[in-house]
Length: 287
Image (cartoon, rainbow, N blue to C red):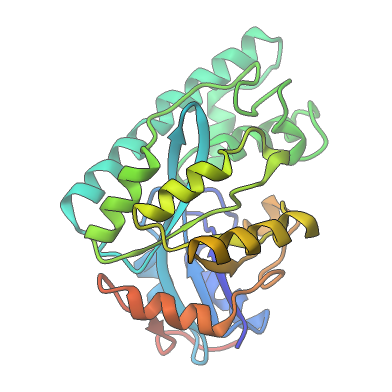
């Protein structure tokens, strides 16, 4: 089985619609794909209706968190999307995205960049507006060569010249809420130092003690030495280890299935989840 547990659609900052994403997962030869848009489950229904035969959809989300001033992302799988407390927190994060993005556009304008809110809104479309959309605007304007080049201290990285904070969950609260909603939690790309500051390993141990289920190990932002370190840490802490593409369509260079999760790990994730169930393909036609 080929299993990719971290992807994004136009419901947040990917370029494939949810339906396109599950169809493209079939083309990529995936057996299981998780839709984990940022702080939203809005794409789940469309994806579920379009899953081709032979592909299974795992519903999820990537929750924005912050610990001691360091941003981090928590992947949540197979939770009850209507559980009130978790839903309320996701809505707080989502509702803060537009004012935050507008504030970043304002900072860029103060830095002499001729970006306009209308340009960013056009790029975001119906998705949850975020930094990748602003980064794409900078690419369109020729300010940077690629989306990743915008995530530097000069521009949009945490603490960068145009960075603006947003409402984010405490990761311990996120773990608690997801577990209460019957879901499973995996710390996304925990040592992706190229993205900026990361939390210390002691914090990962504390999260594990509070119920964190796993850590994402095989990821494009982890080199081989980092992956080896994370596998050792996971073994010490009794955590599951996953691998995923973090696919964003054409917005990033990674492809569906570039990194995958062991079927036994996937089986354990589904065994632990009680809030929702994987969706077997039947609603769509396999390309």
